[in-house]
Image (cartoon, rainbow, N blue to C red):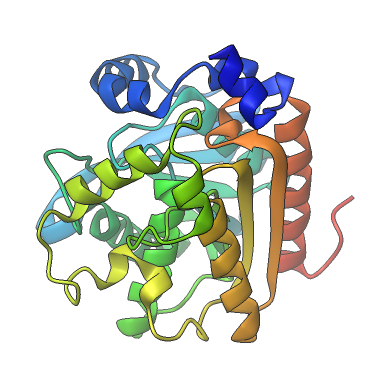
Length: 317
């Protein structure tokens, strides 16, 4: 594994996560999920965490977490909302790192963070996860006043598979003539089932996620879906993205998904969408899990600044 770090010059701060190969993650995800499920997300001194049931696909109910800064619970003011769709290849539950980042968003931005616990593969394939998240998004819109949420200040965000969901939800909202969020923030997103980019061909053995993992994911997620029916799975293939709101994209330097993230950002810019993109040097897929690293601290500072500018049209200090 050390040779792999040298081969890809992965930042030493990511050493603890870069020991895991993509194939290892692909084999061990059921065990990982057991650990994640045991790690319950709880309130702390500054953020309240509440679990509720929200609408999912075809009348189902799914568990959803609501993160809320404790210093605003008594306030009558409706807060901004971050719809947070966690990553994990549509195979894994939210991790402790997802919970920590959700709490940061809630506390630093004085916002409500909504994290749906959407249903996972292999039992639930396309389009269950994105429809679960879409239905919960719509539930938030319809119950915004009761939830204390300002629907004019909504961001959708997600990492990896959660980035895929974020883009899919925006496309679905547009096609179904529903209100779009104020902004979209996607972190090393999965966007293109064609797997035709240079980084997809080059990174076959990178830590955490590689092109072989990616193929396994697409094969499992889509099975034999008709391309038209699978429209929202691979939003890089959608004809026009001109309706997208302001967008922020982060990619990892040593990630098979790198080029499709950059290409997506370039396409948004070409279609006139305000788009901010950052390529994180020395990083592999999943770098967000290194929450104590300077890499994540710098990323969080940029994201908070972007969200603040997007929601409040002012510079965050």
